[in-house]
Length: 185
Image (tube, rainbow, N blue to C red; front, side, top):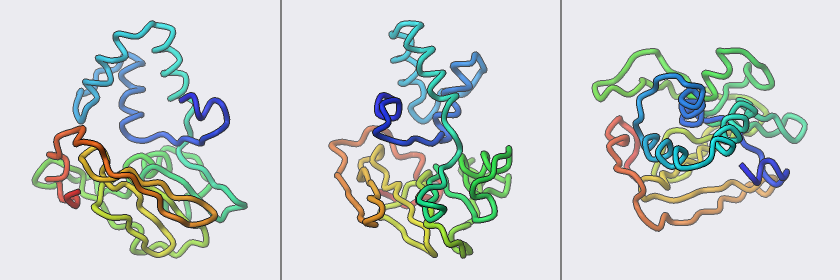
């Protein structure tokens, strides 16, 4: 939050951020996937700080189009026809990826492999679904290598197109999420 506010970082809204924002607005949400820990930590902070977090989350956009349209950053990726657009459908894609609306046998959303069909000029860098190693498909790069599950924290340097990784110091959260068909990390 401080880095973004100082101008040294850009930040897009992710699905867990969106869920926290809904909770901070007073909506009932399920406190799963570590959100309970975050909420407990925030309850120990001042109301002023909680309001700063809420304002920060409200300010985040769904995606960035950078370098004259050559680079797109979105939490869960973004197909070409949505680049630079703003709508509920675009925001949903950026937060959750391309889903069918159905759930698998473990209760997780059924996701469509949008990157397999991507033919856009812009490089799309995204995460959302943890995988064991960085995956580059059709001018897209998925960099969610499951740090929270004991994998790696991955950064993508642009324009160098360099991958930088640091192994997680520990497993911060139980990997039951990965039983939803995602790669073990």
